[in-house]
Amino acid sequence: MMDALWVFGYGSLIWNPGFVVAERRLARLDGWHRSFCMKSVQYRGTPERHGLVLALDARAGAVCHGVALRAADPATALPYLRDRELSGSGYEERFVPLQTDQGEVTGLTFVITPAQPDYLALPMNLQARAIAQAVGARGPNRDYLFATADHLAQLGIPDPEMEALVAMVKAQPL
Image (cartoon, rainbow, N blue to C red; front, side, top):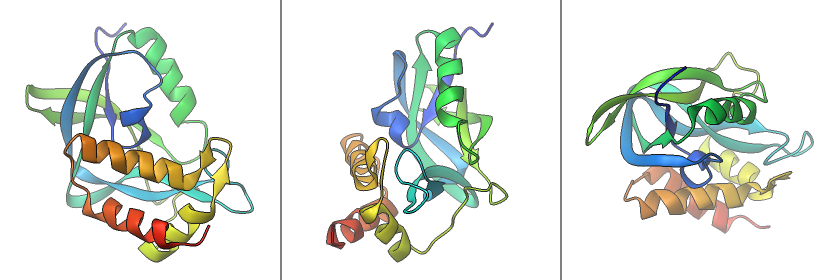
């Protein structure tokens, strides 16, 4: 049994972890970037009108800033996260080194690779169109984008690509 479980939040886990968080630290993950490159046909879209959700996509020299979350109860948090994040065919589970202002921790995160069936790399204008129009079981795709962007801003984490995408989605017709 593990003594501590750190989880890297780079998207909705920042604002909706779904487990009790004992400690939270700003964190950095090297070699990955936050990207709307995973097709969502259930939670934020449908098979007829897919949405897009965030994933960690490998990129040499990239840095992703987010939050390291220490689970209060790893025994319940780990199965919950696996059920939540591994329900589709996009994410792979990884334990990665996270840099925090209090030192390095090893954190669980979920990444995507181009070999995954739900991987979908689109230019930003097509991302904006998909996000603006998609609605799934958890609501409008645009709400997911806006909540993530708002929470990153509240944490003081700049993400110019996401800020540009927010502006593009707001300009799209409903």
